[in-house]
Image (cartoon, rainbow, N blue to C red; front, side, top):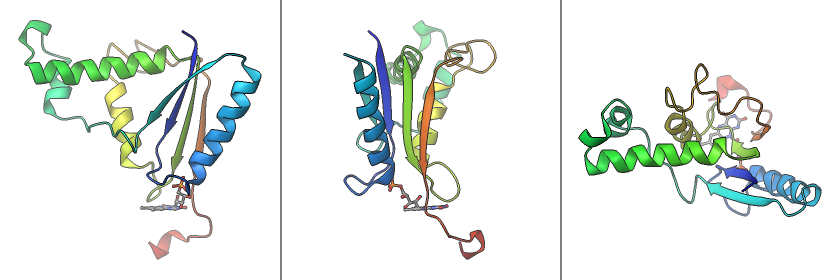
Length: 146
Ligand SMILES: Cc1cc2nc3c(=O)[nH]c(=O)nc-3n(C[C@H](O)[C@H](O)[C@H](O)COP(=O)(O)O)c2cc1C
């Protein structure tokens, strides 16, 4: 199935600027890609767990030696990797929080980067994939005031 993966991060709903931009992008994308499927991942409504010891270590433990909980956490990571690598294109909308991405998006990135499955060296599953970012921030906030 060919699909656009649409990831939203802002915890704001109707008032979110980044979500509005992404929605406009997705509308335009649908108009120019007849019949395209949109897979929507909402990291605010359905937060991704931060990597914990079980999730991290599962990648280095034989399948037979994984506990049930380890196996479930490992499967989540593989499912997320599959979702993004099989997407035809990706659109990510996010606010800037404290001069960085929100922790919800960082948690997602930490989950999908796994040596041997999706990494910048051996398994470059995102190489060549069009990824569009809408990063929204407040203007006119001098850093020293934080
Ligand atoms: C917790 C928090 C931290 C923020 N940090 C920054 C920042 O470091 N720099 C900035 O320019 N704007 C900052 N902002 C402003 C947001 O980026 C801005 O309100 C943006 O519109 C939020 O995106 P959204 O409308 O999609 O939720 C921050 C807002 C919040 C709530």
